[in-house]
Length: 126
Figure 1 (spheres, helix red, strand yellow):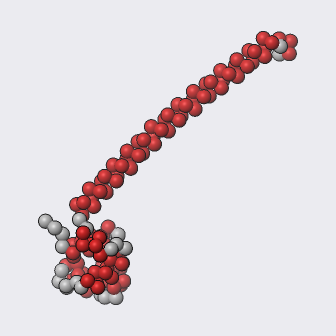
Figure 2 (cartoon, helix red, strand yellow):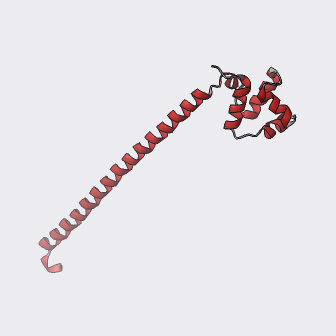
Figure 3 (cartoon, helix red, strand yellow):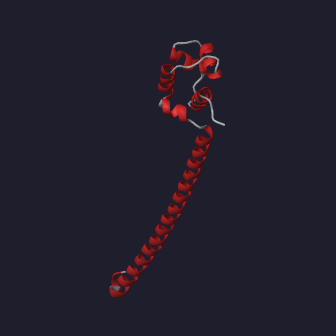
């Protein structure tokens, strides 16, 4: 079942967290008048659709082609990608932390060897 334009406008408005009153104010109409647009009680001209698209910061084509199910799927996919990226970052962080620990051990060992060499080659200066 395809969504009607009125439902698409409403869904996009809600995704933007805009109230009907905000939309009405931007369009220069009453909230009740705007509500009739979303309820389909008023026919909407292409010019009005263009005004609405500007307020919603999307193109008229985006409104016409909007599919809430696709949007939710894309949102979930993006959320999954963020989790994957976060996990990759955690793995990389762990690898770098392990490398730092190894380098610190190597530095400690090198310092011990240096002290040993100093004592061996200059026993009277220690």
